[in-house]
Amino acid sequence: MRKDYIKWDEYFMGLAKLSAERSKDPNTQVGACIVNEAHKVVALGYNGMPRGVQDSDMPWEREGDFLNTKYAYVCHSELNAILNSVANTDGCTIYVTLFPCNECAKAIVQAGIKRVVYADDKYADTDGTKASKTIFNRCGVEYVEYKPSGKNITLSL
Image (cartoon, rainbow, N blue to C red; front, side, top):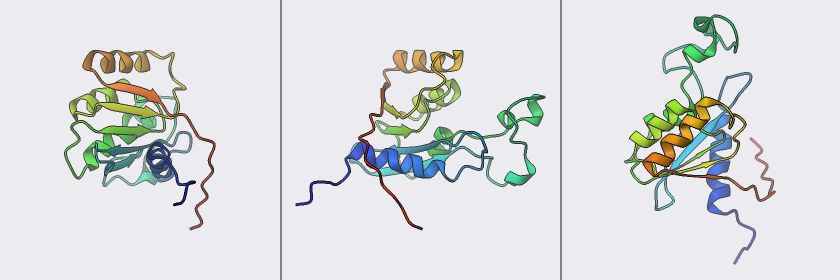
């Protein structure tokens, strides 16, 4: 039997990272993968503009007047994954490349997701991330940092 296969966490975080590659955002690409207790993928998502909106017609700036920045329009990867789900998300785990913001934390809780595995928590000191952790703690959602194995996987497309 082959012994160098990837573990479940590597597999699902890999799918989240691959999904992030679909994002048109020039600064931050985030991906998400929702998995049920049977290790079946329920949904994938990445940060991007709402369905039907031309990405090239929208602002991608991070600063300036709110209506001229991406923040007024972009759907985060977690919300997209929840909206893309093909099955019930109760009790599921979501793998995300960036720790969820407070808005996504609320959506995760409302979707019944019970575990968050995140790759990066670079905004840990922000009020939004602190609020996310408060929401998760009060609602019984476990969150754990993904520990990379150091394994490299190369895809040739």
